[in-house]
Length: 541
Image (cartoon, rainbow, N blue to C red; front, side):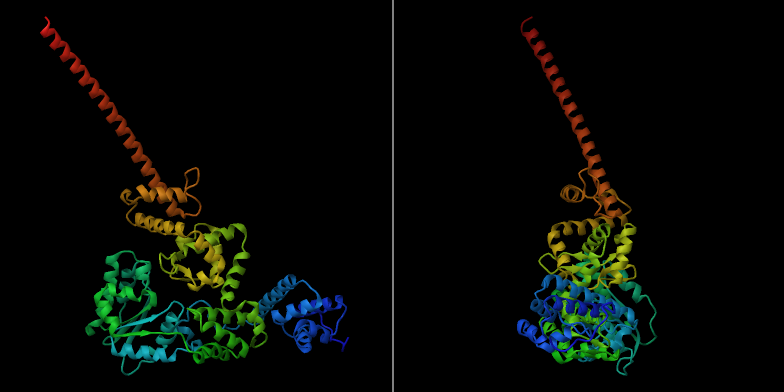
């Protein structure tokens, strides 16, 4: 049977418990030697022996090979292994309250410059463009790291106060649904006399996806282009998604400006991706196993928008670390780079009760803007729009705590658009309800406009739009369904009430007209009858 294994206490921890259970299974199988198991499993005897040693979590393939060799149920043991991996992750998080060296799906901010690696050439080139031009565009695919490059890279570079570009202030904004208000608020802030203010406009594409007023878009762009006059002491950098870059041609002045000065960022080469993986860990005194780095490089190199997914994977590995190491076993536990997002999101969702799960579904779908011949995008929403009751408020905080959602100045949005495609459940929801989501987004905007206009009846739904909303969002009793928030339900009810009032008025008018027509016919007939009688009497006295 081979040498005697060292005894372990199966209550020491999740890894030790799994090892103890593996040993029990081997005993039930007749206690074959590890050499015999190796012949059946396709792994070496030392590897299989180490799996049951309890020193570290074995990889899932090794565990399942051990199970096959012992005649166990692979599905059941895959679940046990996953439970052990999850428990180990929770234990690691409890054991060390230190700062995570990765930011997951959220962007890196100005305070994260010590953890931001891999984009030094782009940061340097962008700073040079700003020194040479007053309006600059940063262009890249979704997930290429534009926001992090601006906030954690460029801000740090500009704060060093280079001699060729003395700056007075750095301000950051995202356009949102009301871009003119966003920029006027920032431009109204005082700068430093005789020095330029640099305005960084992140997610510039929001003027096309969230702002639906053409005049507001034009005014916003015109305000940005005032930077071209040196006397205004303003320099502007816009970060725009590559698939919206062509929209810049809608404004000739903007098109000319970004043509003169833009930086198109491409995926990072392997050596700089490796730096982005390894250096933050080194800053925290951690070690990333080479096999993990190699796996990440292989997946990210061919993954559009892979940087946030990579960062999230690394954050999950940090939570599941073994001592000071980020391990391959943990990497396999979360299902690789795309599985990391789905794993976190699914874990949060399945932990909710039925009422909470329903609220989470409605909330997440509100934060998606379904594409119309274009990719689906995230959609910021106010807390007021999302928090319709205590359950919604509670679920919202859970999703924020899990870093699936981010919040800023009262606005909430998905941590990254990658969540839409990487989490199968959310992608399925969007696909199943794409048409209804289009109707809902339009209803939300119409309700908000109605409110802004003082609930003017002229802003209510009528005709085709009302019929579509009434069919989709009303219960059989003709009341607004629970999927609508208070404002939307009030708007739809007001629209229905106004429609019914107008219909009743039209019916009364129609009945009156019918009565008048009948009376007229009677009068005409009576008059004609009297005339005929007179005529007959006249002809035949």
